[in-house]
Image 1 (cartoon, rainbow, N blue to C red):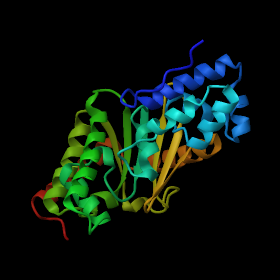
Image 2: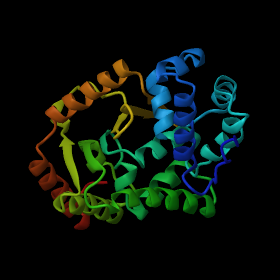
Image 3: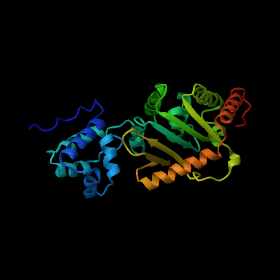
Image 4: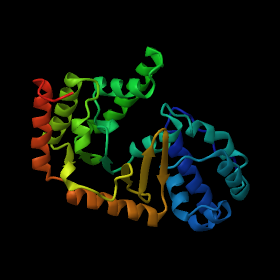
Length: 280
Protein backbone atom coordinates (compact mmCIF):
# COMPACT_ATOMS: atom_id res chain seq x y z
CA UNK A 1 0.00 0.00 0.00
CA UNK A 2 1.45 3.41 -0.89
CA UNK A 3 2.48 5.66 1.97
CA UNK A 4 0.89 9.01 2.73
CA UNK A 5 1.60 11.88 0.39
CA UNK A 6 3.90 14.71 1.44
CA UNK A 7 2.07 17.86 2.45
CA UNK A 8 1.65 20.95 0.34
CA UNK A 9 2.87 23.82 2.56
CA UNK A 10 0.31 26.14 1.00
CA UNK A 11 -2.73 24.06 2.00
CA UNK A 12 -2.92 24.36 5.81
CA UNK A 13 0.01 22.00 6.46
CA UNK A 14 -0.50 21.83 10.21
CA UNK A 15 -4.12 20.71 9.87
CA UNK A 16 -3.18 18.12 7.26
CA UNK A 17 -0.31 16.87 9.39
CA UNK A 18 -2.66 16.53 12.35
CA UNK A 19 -5.21 14.61 10.31
CA UNK A 20 -2.50 12.23 9.14
CA UNK A 21 -1.33 11.73 12.73
CA UNK A 22 -4.85 10.82 13.84
CA UNK A 23 -5.19 8.39 10.94
CA UNK A 24 -1.84 6.73 11.73
CA UNK A 25 -2.60 6.53 15.47
CA UNK A 26 -6.01 4.95 14.92
CA UNK A 27 -4.53 2.51 12.42
CA UNK A 28 -2.02 1.49 15.12
CA UNK A 29 -4.95 1.10 17.56
CA UNK A 30 -3.43 3.48 20.10
CA UNK A 31 -5.21 5.98 22.30
CA UNK A 32 -3.90 9.53 22.51
CA UNK A 33 -2.59 8.77 26.00
CA UNK A 34 -0.81 5.62 24.81
CA UNK A 35 0.86 7.50 21.97
CA UNK A 36 1.85 10.39 24.20
CA UNK A 37 3.42 8.33 27.01
CA UNK A 38 6.68 7.40 25.20
CA UNK A 39 7.03 11.06 24.17
CA UNK A 40 6.52 12.20 27.77
CA UNK A 41 3.55 14.34 26.72
CA UNK A 42 -0.11 14.17 27.68
CA UNK A 43 -2.90 12.67 25.67
CA UNK A 44 -4.36 16.17 25.37
CA UNK A 45 -1.13 17.32 23.71
CA UNK A 46 -1.49 14.56 21.11
CA UNK A 47 -5.08 15.70 20.62
CA UNK A 48 -3.90 19.24 19.99
CA UNK A 49 -1.36 18.00 17.44
CA UNK A 50 -4.14 16.10 15.70
CA UNK A 51 -6.44 19.14 15.76
CA UNK A 52 -3.69 21.39 14.38
CA UNK A 53 -3.62 23.66 17.43
CA UNK A 54 -0.06 22.72 18.38
CA UNK A 55 3.14 22.53 16.37
CA UNK A 56 4.83 19.22 15.75
CA UNK A 57 8.46 19.68 16.71
CA UNK A 58 11.17 17.73 14.81
CA UNK A 59 12.07 15.57 17.79
CA UNK A 60 8.44 14.47 18.14
CA UNK A 61 8.11 13.91 14.40
CA UNK A 62 11.06 11.54 14.31
CA UNK A 63 9.79 9.55 17.28
CA UNK A 64 6.27 9.36 15.84
CA UNK A 65 7.63 8.01 12.56
CA UNK A 66 9.38 5.26 14.50
CA UNK A 67 6.37 4.40 16.67
CA UNK A 68 3.76 4.54 13.90
CA UNK A 69 5.99 3.15 11.12
CA UNK A 70 5.19 6.04 8.79
CA UNK A 71 8.43 5.85 6.80
CA UNK A 72 9.72 9.31 7.75
CA UNK A 73 6.49 11.11 6.77
CA UNK A 74 6.23 13.32 9.85
CA UNK A 75 9.93 14.19 9.88
CA UNK A 76 9.76 15.22 6.23
CA UNK A 77 6.65 17.33 6.58
CA UNK A 78 6.86 18.93 10.02
CA UNK A 79 9.17 21.62 8.66
CA UNK A 80 6.33 22.93 6.48
CA UNK A 81 4.01 23.11 9.50
CA UNK A 82 6.46 25.21 11.54
CA UNK A 83 6.91 28.04 9.02
CA UNK A 84 5.48 31.26 10.44
CA UNK A 85 5.55 35.02 9.88
CA UNK A 86 5.30 35.61 13.63
CA UNK A 87 8.10 35.76 16.24
CA UNK A 88 9.06 32.35 17.59
CA UNK A 89 7.69 33.02 21.08
CA UNK A 90 4.25 33.94 19.68
CA UNK A 91 3.95 31.88 16.48
CA UNK A 92 2.24 28.86 17.99
CA UNK A 93 -0.22 31.01 19.94
CA UNK A 94 -1.09 33.08 16.84
CA UNK A 95 -1.75 29.99 14.80
CA UNK A 96 -3.89 28.44 17.54
CA UNK A 97 -5.77 31.73 17.82
CA UNK A 98 -6.70 31.50 14.13
CA UNK A 99 -8.77 28.35 14.70
CA UNK A 100 -10.11 29.07 18.19
CA UNK A 101 -13.86 29.27 18.73
CA UNK A 102 -13.50 31.52 21.79
CA UNK A 103 -10.72 33.92 22.76
CA UNK A 104 -10.66 35.62 26.16
CA UNK A 105 -7.85 38.07 26.81
CA UNK A 106 -6.72 40.26 29.68
CA UNK A 107 -4.53 43.12 28.43
CA UNK A 108 -2.64 44.98 31.17
CA UNK A 109 -0.66 47.51 29.09
CA UNK A 110 -1.54 47.52 25.39
CA UNK A 111 -4.58 47.14 23.17
CA UNK A 112 -4.57 43.46 22.10
CA UNK A 113 -2.99 42.78 18.72
CA UNK A 114 -6.26 41.67 17.12
CA UNK A 115 -7.76 45.10 17.90
CA UNK A 116 -4.85 47.38 17.01
CA UNK A 117 -4.98 49.99 14.27
CA UNK A 118 -2.09 50.55 11.90
CA UNK A 119 -0.80 53.71 13.60
CA UNK A 120 -1.01 52.12 17.04
CA UNK A 121 0.72 48.91 15.92
CA UNK A 122 3.45 50.90 14.18
CA UNK A 123 4.15 52.87 17.36
CA UNK A 124 4.31 49.65 19.38
CA UNK A 125 6.76 47.94 17.02
CA UNK A 126 8.91 51.05 16.71
CA UNK A 127 9.16 51.16 20.51
CA UNK A 128 10.06 47.45 20.58
CA UNK A 129 12.74 47.85 17.88
CA UNK A 130 14.00 51.46 17.88
CA UNK A 131 16.84 50.76 15.42
CA UNK A 132 14.94 48.52 12.97
CA UNK A 133 14.59 49.57 9.33
CA UNK A 134 11.26 50.78 8.02
CA UNK A 135 11.03 47.61 5.94
CA UNK A 136 11.20 45.47 9.08
CA UNK A 137 8.61 47.59 10.88
CA UNK A 138 6.32 47.50 7.84
CA UNK A 139 6.53 43.71 7.74
CA UNK A 140 5.64 43.44 11.43
CA UNK A 141 2.73 45.84 11.10
CA UNK A 142 1.42 43.99 8.04
CA UNK A 143 1.48 40.67 9.91
CA UNK A 144 -0.36 42.18 12.86
CA UNK A 145 -3.06 43.76 10.72
CA UNK A 146 -3.43 40.51 8.80
CA UNK A 147 -4.25 38.77 12.08
CA UNK A 148 -7.16 41.17 12.55
CA UNK A 149 -8.92 39.64 9.54
CA UNK A 150 -9.85 36.90 12.00
CA UNK A 151 -12.67 39.28 13.02
CA UNK A 152 -14.05 39.60 9.48
CA UNK A 153 -16.45 36.78 10.25
CA UNK A 154 -19.46 38.44 11.95
CA UNK A 155 -19.88 35.86 14.71
CA UNK A 156 -16.75 33.79 15.31
CA UNK A 157 -14.51 33.56 17.12
CA UNK A 158 -16.14 35.00 20.21
CA UNK A 159 -13.65 37.62 21.44
CA UNK A 160 -13.97 38.86 25.01
CA UNK A 161 -11.27 41.22 26.20
CA UNK A 162 -10.65 42.93 29.51
CA UNK A 163 -8.52 46.06 29.16
CA UNK A 164 -6.73 47.42 32.17
CA UNK A 165 -7.36 51.15 32.56
CA UNK A 166 -3.64 51.62 31.92
CA UNK A 167 -4.30 50.57 28.30
CA UNK A 168 -6.57 53.57 27.89
CA UNK A 169 -4.27 56.03 29.64
CA UNK A 170 -0.92 55.02 28.11
CA UNK A 171 -0.37 57.31 25.11
CA UNK A 172 0.97 55.06 22.35
CA UNK A 173 1.77 56.88 19.11
CA UNK A 174 0.35 60.23 20.24
CA UNK A 175 -3.12 61.59 20.90
CA UNK A 176 -4.45 61.10 17.36
CA UNK A 177 -3.30 57.47 17.24
CA UNK A 178 -4.85 56.80 20.64
CA UNK A 179 -8.16 58.38 19.67
CA UNK A 180 -8.31 56.29 16.50
CA UNK A 181 -7.36 53.10 18.33
CA UNK A 182 -9.93 53.52 21.09
CA UNK A 183 -12.68 54.49 18.64
CA UNK A 184 -11.86 51.31 16.72
CA UNK A 185 -12.36 49.21 19.88
CA UNK A 186 -15.57 51.10 20.62
CA UNK A 187 -16.97 50.52 17.13
CA UNK A 188 -16.31 46.78 17.31
CA UNK A 189 -17.99 46.74 20.70
CA UNK A 190 -21.01 48.75 19.56
CA UNK A 191 -21.39 46.46 16.55
CA UNK A 192 -21.52 43.51 18.98
CA UNK A 193 -18.52 41.92 17.31
CA UNK A 194 -16.52 41.83 20.55
CA UNK A 195 -17.20 42.04 24.28
CA UNK A 196 -15.08 44.62 26.07
CA UNK A 197 -14.62 45.43 29.73
CA UNK A 198 -12.28 47.86 31.47
CA UNK A 199 -10.58 46.99 34.75
CA UNK A 200 -10.33 50.35 36.57
CA UNK A 201 -7.38 51.43 38.64
CA UNK A 202 -9.73 51.45 41.62
CA UNK A 203 -10.05 47.66 41.45
CA UNK A 204 -6.66 47.43 43.14
CA UNK A 205 -4.66 44.19 43.30
CA UNK A 206 -5.91 41.20 41.34
CA UNK A 207 -4.89 37.69 40.32
CA UNK A 208 -3.47 38.66 36.90
CA UNK A 209 -1.19 41.50 38.00
CA UNK A 210 1.93 39.76 36.71
CA UNK A 211 1.14 39.93 33.01
CA UNK A 212 -1.10 39.43 30.00
CA UNK A 213 -3.29 36.37 29.60
CA UNK A 214 -5.02 34.80 26.61
CA UNK A 215 -7.39 31.83 26.86
CA UNK A 216 -8.42 29.90 23.75
CA UNK A 217 -11.01 27.15 23.33
CA UNK A 218 -11.57 24.91 20.32
CA UNK A 219 -14.24 22.69 18.81
CA UNK A 220 -12.28 19.45 18.94
CA UNK A 221 -9.26 20.07 21.16
CA UNK A 222 -8.63 20.97 24.81
CA UNK A 223 -8.31 24.66 25.74
CA UNK A 224 -5.00 26.53 25.79
CA UNK A 225 -3.67 29.42 27.84
CA UNK A 226 -0.98 31.81 26.62
CA UNK A 227 0.98 34.11 28.91
CA UNK A 228 3.49 36.64 27.59
CA UNK A 229 6.42 38.63 28.94
CA UNK A 230 9.21 40.74 27.48
CA UNK A 231 10.14 38.90 24.27
CA UNK A 232 8.87 35.62 25.69
CA UNK A 233 5.66 33.64 25.68
CA UNK A 234 4.40 30.30 26.96
CA UNK A 235 1.53 28.23 25.65
CA UNK A 236 0.03 25.97 28.32
CA UNK A 237 -2.12 22.90 27.82
CA UNK A 238 -1.89 21.25 31.24
CA UNK A 239 -5.52 21.08 32.44
CA UNK A 240 -4.74 22.20 35.99
CA UNK A 241 -2.68 25.15 34.74
CA UNK A 242 -5.33 26.21 32.23
CA UNK A 243 -8.00 25.96 34.94
CA UNK A 244 -5.96 28.25 37.19
CA UNK A 245 -5.63 30.82 34.42
CA UNK A 246 -9.33 30.57 33.67
CA UNK A 247 -10.03 31.40 37.32
CA UNK A 248 -7.69 34.40 37.08
CA UNK A 249 -9.53 35.69 34.03
CA UNK A 250 -12.93 35.17 35.65
CA UNK A 251 -11.87 37.09 38.76
CA UNK A 252 -10.47 39.94 36.66
CA UNK A 253 -13.74 40.11 34.74
CA UNK A 254 -15.72 40.12 37.97
CA UNK A 255 -13.73 43.15 39.17
CA UNK A 256 -14.03 45.01 35.86
CA UNK A 257 -16.68 47.54 34.88
CA UNK A 258 -19.77 46.29 33.07
CA UNK A 259 -19.58 46.22 29.25
CA UNK A 260 -21.92 49.23 29.06
CA UNK A 261 -19.92 51.32 31.54
CA UNK A 262 -16.66 50.18 29.95
CA UNK A 263 -17.81 51.32 26.50
CA UNK A 264 -18.78 54.71 27.87
CA UNK A 265 -15.35 55.10 29.47
CA UNK A 266 -13.50 54.04 26.30
CA UNK A 267 -15.45 56.52 24.20
CA UNK A 268 -14.96 59.29 26.76
CA UNK A 269 -11.20 58.78 26.84
CA UNK A 270 -11.12 58.63 23.03
CA UNK A 271 -12.95 61.95 22.93
CA UNK A 272 -10.41 63.44 25.33
CA UNK A 273 -7.55 62.33 23.07
CA UNK A 274 -9.34 63.64 19.99
CA UNK A 275 -9.74 67.06 21.57
CA UNK A 276 -6.32 67.17 23.21
CA UNK A 277 -7.65 66.96 26.76
CA UNK A 278 -5.54 63.98 27.86
CA UNK A 279 -2.39 64.98 29.71
CA UNK A 280 0.86 63.72 28.14
